[in-house]
Amino acid sequence: MSIDYDIQDLDLAPAGRLRIEWAEREMPVLRLIRKRFSTEKPLQGVRMSACLHITTETANLARTLQAGGAEVTLTASNPLSTQDDVAAALASYYEIPVFAIKGEDNETYYRHIHAALDIKPHITMDDGADLVSTLHKQRTELIDGVIGGTEETTTGVIRLRAMARNGVLRYPIVAVNDALTKHLFDNRYGTGQSTLDGVIRATNVLLAGKTVVVAGYGWCSRGIAMRAQGHGANVIVTEVNPLKALEAVMDGYRVMPMIEAAPQGDVFITSTGDINVIDRQHFEAMKDGAIVSNSGHFNVEINIPALQEMADGQPRRVRPFVDEYTLPDGRRIHLLADGRLVNLAAAEGHPSAVMDMSFANQALCAAYMVENADKLEKKVYSVPEEIDAEIAQIKLRAMNIEIDVLTPEQEAYLASWEEGT
Image 1 (tube, rainbow, N blue to C red):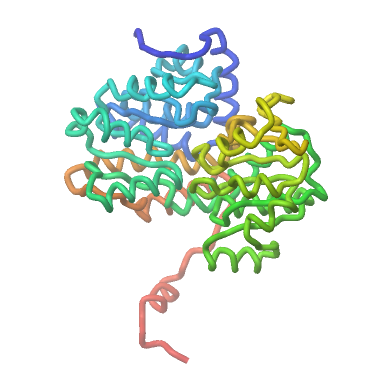
Image 2: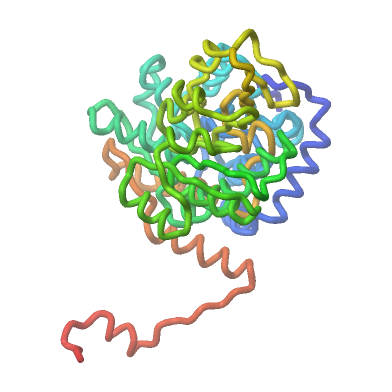
């Protein structure tokens, strides 16, 4: 079989295959689904364009979709998140077309998205909604053939719900990010660990005793704050939502506006999904040596153009993924990974054990979409509760954990209204 692809180096494939197999050890839910898909073939003949981070975990998702009968084409959802050895292994050993090169420029990034769309997909699988938005803006001739899609991350769901509100979303999407087995675990524990891993790999700084400023207190930021505190950092949380801010206070963190946190922070981490969360006035207030990073999907949370305008000359690359900007007064600000996802650019992304549940949702939701294609409207759906519960049950069994089961008497009590004091 001859496949089309655009990757860094096919010779990297053996190393990538070993890492894919290593990740699979920690993905028992996806393994079980792959076994079922191999027999049932719920995706037989379905063409799928997937715009995801090209990692070892994504590779095991692609293998699962392939086992279900799907024709899968992969492209990167972020220019810096591709693991080139994994891309090579997918093309070489698993015959899955991949269009992704770590560090690709913006033109190449979108050329790769178009290459993934060239297969005329029946289903799109997105992480950030770049694939869907490109399809709706530039490849509208393909939309009639699309039966549905899935979206992996908070930022993408926000964009897709905006499209639905504006009446421009032209096929149904399942918001995988909203599944409890996704955002309660992937967003919190996955982002928390992998973001701190990325910051530490990039800088080798000791977090104990440092002041870490976490922008936002959604599930991703909760995980980051929790893990930073576990490293011994003094954590400040900034928020715009009063309920989330109150929760951060009750969880033991200091809460204040970013302009007050700016002169106190040693390390800044954004994860909000919004633009210019760290802006010019914040750079002006930061101490010498401040480290600034982002764990939100797009590199817009830090106002990099403003930092570039403020800097005295070009930045200096002092370590891989660390650019040092020197301000006119001599203060230095260190930007990590070009403001892109630090956990994927400077590290390996989420541990496979937590992505096991997220990608199980992707696989089962793709099958659900095929089965219910004629019933779904052009809007954003939550993951069906039965899929969420099934994934949690499988994960518990894989961890050799048993839980109680309601007795008939308990079920009857919970279903009644007559019982009282």
